Image (cartoon, rainbow, N blue to C red):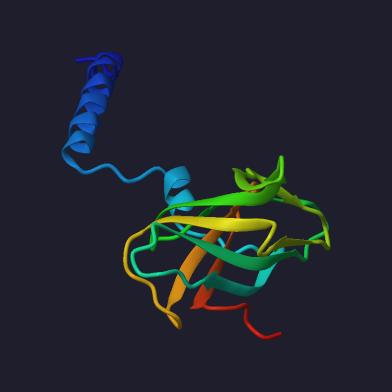
Length: 166
């Protein structure tokens, strides 16, 4: 058998054999998905004064507050917030419309370079919906703030009756 015939027969056989071996092994998670599932601490942001207003037992919603500081040289876009303690976390804004107090989803927020996003009573606040457990004064809740550049900041907030002393 000449060498060219061996190559023509062997190459397709090796491709099929490699595909069979690969199909019999569990596939690894693609790198892009693996990187997204692990939080990346944002070097450009830090948070202080994080707290959650205590609510009556059985409350379906609570509110969270904090100051998010952009220490970077570029604007930082806060795109979402999540917590394993709540089914949903959204950024809302308190407003007075036609003399009535109301709230509306605020959506993404841009924090200018060197600036601070104040999430405080009477304005922007985290609307914490569907608590997965009862929360009492002194309990701590973990949050992840997700930014448009793919980075994240980890935050722990205490449940309290009033803001923490500065």
